Image 1 (tube, helix red, strand yellow):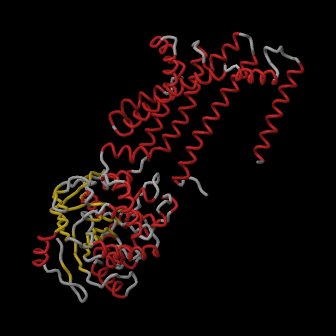
Image 2 (image 1 turned 180 degrees about the vertical axis):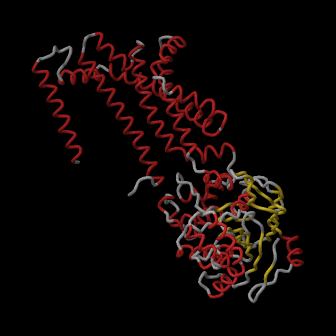
Image 3 (image 1 turned 45 degrees about the vertical axis):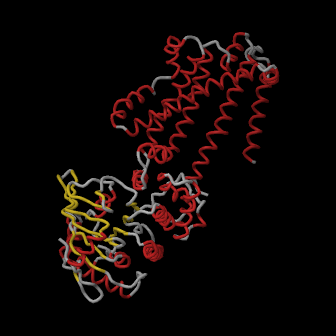
Length: 307
Length: 252
């Protein structure tokens, strides 16, 4: 189960307060969600008894080691995968399949190569039946928001990775969804591009007030972006801890407070990291790895600020 | 430019050797006519419109037969590519049938439709349909699931998903299949026209044989080759180039 942590810049999670506010403006409610897969070695429990509420306009990051089921969780919320048990309520309706109120932005931009940039942004609106000129205007408006209106007639392959992801964000926003579901959208980008996109995403969020559920394995990224960080443990994925981040926005990856906060979160999660590292090492038959694993400081390894 | 120059040299040389062999008179003229008489037959054939009529009739047949094969091929490919039960049943039938040379359908076509246009159109359609089916199936299986997931979260359902996402994503494969299908269809058309007496280019070829007119035989062969090349260059090569550029499959 989740527990709240509070130091200095954090706000102690007050459950009674959250409860009353949640009742008025809960955007997403996940109740007793569990999910398992059948594998060669038997049943693997990916998610176990996840309970989570996200409020209107909240920016929530879910962090966890790879394989902890965070992408599965997002897919279930998106309606792209089915849960074994539990319920999900999004925007007051029970989730039963994909819906345009919850648009997903994937790790790869998933733009359609047979359409140019603006046609990609218009795609969702076209499906909604919005007429030609109106959807063109909306598309241009959102391309402007991601600073790509100059590239509206470009082919997808002419864009860089960061530009593609910005088009994907514009495409999602153009549909005016209640909620954005982002699945490690910046993890394939270089640090420079990521840094810019962290700024842009925060500005977009401040402007549009969308509820955002953001998946990442990068704690620094989570601290930079989120109001609230949910930490998942691995196998089975359970909510391990919650952190509230109350730093002024827009935040910068390299800001001292962000860095300090990330270090602190890392420290709090050290036990979990050790567990994962050990776990991964054990499956590796390499002798050298085993030696490293038995030493007491696996967290010293370069794991790139993530867990 | 250099490559065109090389081609011109090559074909001039070829014509020269041909003319030389003719002048040496090793074979009688009904075996090897001179390039000049073939050229005259070509001009004459177009002037009295025999060739034009032949081309028009053949093109009409292939347009109908090939058109039918595209519609059926894409639909079958969709079914096999997306529905498990069709893949397991129809899929194996299709790959089995592909080993059958198209001309083997001729006796069946004759018995079903008689000695007429319909039999030839059937032959043309059978020639192309399997290639298009197999290519469409392969194209659909290669559509990245990510596209489908992305489209679903943006509200694509049912037919929309097929027409907006799955078919366009599979298009590079489908075009390749259509190109291959076209060459099979063209061959089947000629085979059919050679065997069934009902005008068309293949029939003109047979008339040449019946009249012992080798110039006509070679002239019609040249027409058939040129049409084949023109369709390939003007349609398929352009289409493939367009798709390659759009998708960024070529560098530079």
